[in-house]
Image (cartoon, rainbow, N blue to C red; front, top):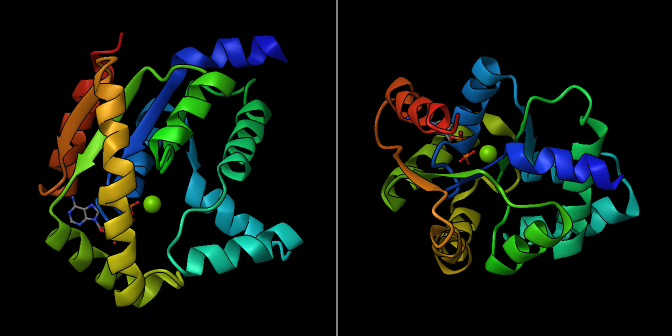
Length: 196
Ligand SMILES: Nc1ncnc2c1ncn2[C@H]1C[C@H](O)[C@@H](COP(=O)(O)OP(=O)(O)O)O1
Ligand SMILES: [Mg+2]
């Protein structure tokens, strides 16, 4: 068990950036090219909600308000998913976690130090526009104007400090996500290739 965590800690990439900045879009392309296992904390949580479990019901109420769900719940789910894929994974791409500095500290303690943090950066105005558009087809309860505003506020307040926290260890690469998807990916590729 201990070994598993030790082995995987050198292949962990974090995707950080505001809601609608393009994390999921870039993750898909990274998975296709590099074969990393994509773990989206939001997807893991939404799957738990869809399962209809008691934990899922509590999560749903929190997510619909645009608030952050409890620290331990998300980290446990990520860790379980990492261990489940440990044999086949070439690395891990963690999307949407840590959302606050405390989550980052817990991640280091319970899982390990990430190798790279890709900071997918877009203007607030761009993010809102993309999310409103995504909301037309995504079916996501949180892709509506009021919740989008709350998620953005929370992002600037809680998640941006996470990036500052990782700056200290020199693993942050800022990616201009105002560019078209393929141009953004070209910058992402460069950052990942530099890892070797
Ligand atoms: N570079 C880019 N240019 C234009 N649209 C983009 C883009 N990256 C992503 N999008 C679109 C795809 C989605 O409909 C929406 C949000 O992207 P996403 O990948 O779901 O963001 P996130 O996972 O960060 O919330 O914006
Ligand atoms: Mg996403």
